[in-house]
Structure formats: structure tokens, C-alpha cells
Image (cartoon, rainbow, N blue to C red; front, side, top):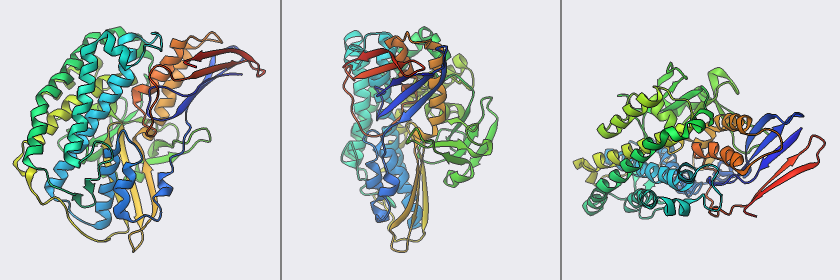
Length: 474
């Protein structure tokens, strides 16, 4: 049996590799997505004062620190036993929505659009954001500006773009001032226009990616996300909903803080990323997806007129429950429109300038669970503390982890379609990476060199001999 190894997987956030096992006839027998780095934040948290947890947990990631900040603060709210002031809940929502906008923009424009615009077989030396800027300058400018919009909202609320310490146990540390609110609102129309222009471009070109749509993680699965009692999308608060591939409700209206009643967590010796699964179906049959595709599948509607119109068109084009992971891209753009609209809606409410933004308390409970929707999907922080408020145990169910089974299934599907024996072209390998990019996995804070990431693929014969080596960017 031979093996093809892609290490590292490029244009994702963190470090990973893909291995493809070939049988004696050269056919793909298996494919695996390996997360090769250890983060260890569950152990790092042990012994720390619980009030430090939000700022500590934000350091898990430089791409989506706000998501961890909010989920962690919500877990701390439970430990303190406080009712968060209503205005603080609204302001937390604004920051989380801005986090979704900036993170989705990073994935779509910087990491994925090079494939969509230039082609999956384009030379890797030009298949990056600078290549996009050369071919389609307006598209690149819109991507940079949309990400900047999300980052600036976070900075105006929290004082900094990365690792803001503004979200704290009991609420937020400072109220929103009128000048900050007005500055954000003044930028909303242009941000919305950029998001809609990109969405229009994507829809016009959707048919050109028919082959990738059919092959990139296109299989039935469960879908999981948070919804409001109205059926609208919920990013910071809401109840848990799980539907199957045909839309049958398996869980609805459930308290996501009791996640252990619905989720199991498995481990495999070949990856440091856990494998969550839907507990009633067992492992690995309980595969499900989270994130933009799943959220659009579980909600009745999004909740703002323009985004709901786009959602209706999305469903008319793709069906009520689209199953291809390639459609994460389409869903991501619709969510950007929705989040911009929601930021505006919240900031236009008069109570958003209320100065009562934090409830203070000591430890009143020995356990707390915080749940929010990160850009990539459901995020859970679960802490247990002692009478002194020191963390004795922590469990984190990271958004990327929920998709782990599906990412592995997608890698196998793409490998079986594109790889036949030892004749492997670079574009085939890029498609293997691209199916992982569609999920937008976030494995840690890291930066990769544009277009020059070293990639060496060894194709090995069944007896262990080197048949061929493919190199890129070395």
C-alpha cells in the first residue's frame, strides 16, 4: 500500500496535513485530515482564577478571539450566578457579529477566492490574494475593506482589533459612546454594498464550479446550530437545533449548555483534534456539520429582509438542505450580509447607549457552560471551579472540531475522485486542500507565506520505495 502526504495544508489557519493511502492497484483506500499541533488550553486553564478565563481563552486564536472571549464570559456568568445587563448582551452580540464578518471575509477573499477566481489548477505562485488583486482589483479591495470593517467594529467596542479584553464576566467593561456608535453606523452602507457586490459576483459564477460542487464534501449528514425561538439565526444566544439531511428535526429547543446530552467526543491516535459526534447515533455514524452551511440549513430564516431574500434565492438554487460543503462559500457571503444588517439594527436601538453594562459578583456556582456561534460553528466552554474560584477542570468543544468527521469524509471523497495511482498533478493536491478550506478550519494563530508555502509529496510503492516526489514552493 502506498501513501501520499500533503504537509502542510496551505491557506488554512493553523498546521495540518493530509495523508492518502493507496491500495496495491493504485486506488485510494483512505484519506485522513491530521491536526498536527497541540494547543493544550484545557490544561493551561487549570489553577487559574475564573475571572481571568475570558482574556486567557481569547489567546487560543488570533483569528477568532472574540468568539472564545464571548463563550468564556458566558461560562463565567454562570459561575458568578449573575444576570447580565440587557445592554451588555446587545453589545456582546455586536462584537460577535463583527467577528463573523471579519473572519468570513478572511476566508472567502484571502484563502478561498484565489481558487475560485484563478482556478484550482492555476500556478501556486500566483494563486493568492495578490493574484486576485491583479486579476480582479475590485474584488480584492472589497475583501480587504470588509475584513477591515469587522475589525474596526471590534476595535471601537473593545479598544483593540485582536484579543480585546472588553468582554468580561458579568457583561462588558465599558459602555458604548454615541461617537463610537455613529462611526460604526456611518460605515455600514458601504460595507453592505461591498458584501452584496461580492455575493452577486459569486452567484454569476456559481455554475462554473459545478464539478467542485459535486465532489467537495457532498454527502448527507446532520446539521447543528443555534436558533432563536422565532426560528431566526442566533449567533450569541439561542437554543440548540439538529436536523438530518432531509430536514427532520432530531433536536429542537434544547438548552445548548447541556451539550453532553447530545454530543460525544472521540479521539484518534493520528490527530490532536477531537472528533465530536451526535451521541444518539454513536461514533462515527453521528457525523454532523456546523458553521455557515449548517446554520442556513437549521434556521427557518435569518431575520433581516435583505439577507432573507438572499436565503430564499439560495434555497431556490440549491434546495432546502444543500449537502455540498462547497456551498459553505455561498452561505458565508449571505451571513456577512446578515451580520452587517444585524449590527446596524442593534446599534439603532436607543438602549444600546445605556451605561449599566456589568453585573458584579463573587463565585456563586461551581460550574458554568458558555455557548456561542463562532464563524466556523458552535463553540462550547465548560468550566468547573473550587470555592476560591480557581478552575479545576475545563472542556472546550471547538467549532472546527465539530466538523472533523465531515472534513475527513470530504478529503476521502475528493481523493477518490481525483487521485488515480502515482500520476498526481499539483491541481489535484490543491483540490484536496480546498475541500478542507471550504470548512474554514481554525487550528491556531499562524501565518503562511503567500504562494510559496513549501509542499513535498512523496508517492511510495507498496514495498516502501519512493516512486515519485512532487515539490511545490521549495
